[in-house]
Length: 338
Ligand SMILES: O=C(O)CCC(=O)C(=O)O
Image 1 (cartoon, rainbow, N blue to C red):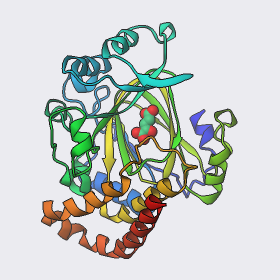
Image 2: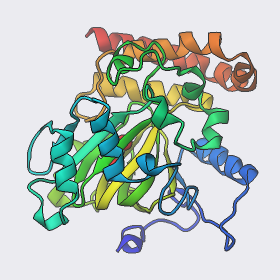
Image 3: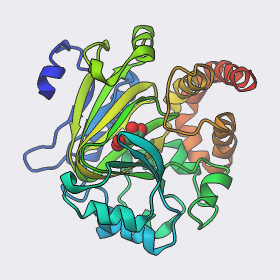
Image 4: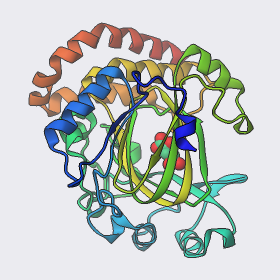
């Protein structure tokens, strides 16, 4: 079915990068870096198959590898009840004990189908140290270089941190839940610890934007130009550059670890997409857009004070894009004020 959905794509113009594992399961870091850089240059999503454990993903212990252990950990540490999207019902917060009780039931016996997007993780050292973060991001991602937890409380860090607080988050989804098409405020990476998801993508072309503005789920995916799907299994590492509309169907109960990232070469495009989100309400986003301008200002102001070395390596790219960045920032300001 997935092959059929992707059938229209020209063989010579593959819509995304797909780095398969070798028969020994190995891929070396140089090859991963080269693939990541190529994907940035061509502005395409890319997936590294079996990057992490299958099952287990990037998790180092049960808390970061299994849904129920992850929820039980949060429940035991006084985290605020998570805000859940509920299939066919209004979204709302649900107690951890309630969520856990539903997850242990068979999917067909559950009282609701919940999708918990964007659990913040960065303030929580016990969780952060039990995740094997993708090495390619440690090298290239500006956000990872400027993010330091400012509070040990679950929500305070998110609200008060000067550097962006969402370089790391988790998504917990019940089988059958669906996240509709949206744009993220920054580029996003994701790895399943357990479960299975199907991601659908389409580029942010004028034609697609017009279709998206009137689109209903019953129309399917065929109406979007250059739309394609990728199936993700535990351990597959997916990078989604900012500006790709995406929707996600959860095939089996899933725990996904991921976050936002920002590479210098993509700075201008990230600002462009953020500007669109701020100025054009037709496009939905799962992220809060409140304070989006400050978010980008923080990135730019905190970054130089933190990592001189990284600046040297990426300065060329930054200067190349500086003009565009300034232009986009101005537009963002206009959007925020209007
Ligand atoms: O896994 C999901 O249901 C949605 C994840 C997503 O779209 C995102 O993190 O941007």
